[in-house]
Length: 111
Length: 113
Image 1 (cartoon, helix red, strand yellow):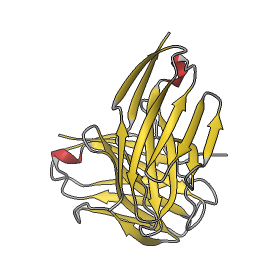
Image 2 (cartoon, rainbow over the protein chains, first blue to last red):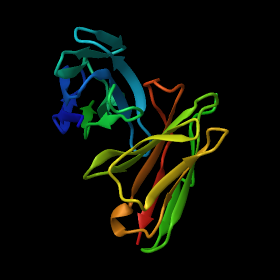
Image 3 (cartoon, chains in turn blue, orange):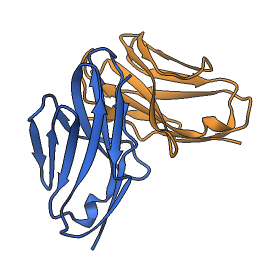
């Protein structure tokens, strides 16, 4: 069974203080690993897809990386508007149509 | 381009009742999946439909059911509601059979009293 564990559960940063969020996964045949952002009262919003170990994707202050067992979401010089819950999900070749999500990391960036 | 539309956004039911939630995917998206989100369990997969066929189903009791219509719109139904069914129900659509990126709606917030 596919499993995703995210840490920490919550992270409080000062504006400009860089940090990383972790996503550990177990999956038989990784089709893709996904990062989503969820703001209160809204559905998750897609950020990145990573397909193979060593791959990296960047968007503004966010950078996602992937190894064979985990992914990191690096946040460089965060701003208060980066405050949200960040969700990691995996899809496998053996479980068609299903994304398995972690419980998320709630990030709060204080000005 | 219109996003994923879910109706109703909020609803309150009592135990034993049933509820039907609706989802209109992005135009051209043929896959629709449903997730239950609660503070304690996070996002849990309910089921996924592609071209009116259920391809996968999560570990939920038979009270949870769904369907997809020929225009890709989808509905999910929960019968004999229990207090524990209170949750945010999220619908997501994606382009094709093996397309991976999900576009979520804002969800339907169900409260069971």
